[in-house]
Image (tube, rainbow, N blue to C red):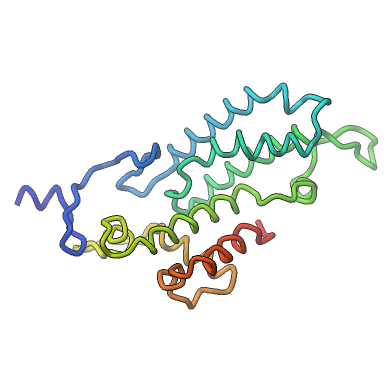
Length: 221
């Protein structure tokens, strides 16, 4: 009886129930909450930006080179472990605010046509200037790549059953939390594949890679 209260079974496999654990450096909780994890990532990204600040504000470097610095040094720090995150709109907005904050320092201010004074770039102007996929799209593509890998490793691996298994027992009353799998179905719906079995679809590596690229490069917020 004591063992049942501290373990759960998924398809004849037993897993210890814990409040949180580390996976590839990211903290996963039993409440499916990533607020603290994303907050920590933003703090790390802020530290990374300040280390690169002199380069990003230098007039000797082109804007394209500064964008490469942002995408290869700063954003990977912020997005580390993002493949585990469930969709959290409030936290995603914070990530986008951080990205726009860095981009405004790369592109600099603009002269207002009406007042003639310097002003910050609006979000729409940043979208026009920044042709690369935004932070939302990068998160989605990383989730898609990861789930494709897990779907293809097959039934002999425990990770596969953690993804597709159905835990026994009843869930709590109320609206269910957004599951990680729900994110994948939402992303596929964006590119017109909502009716497809995503596990079967992921078995075709080239086709799945094309879907990952489609999700990443879709030009919507």
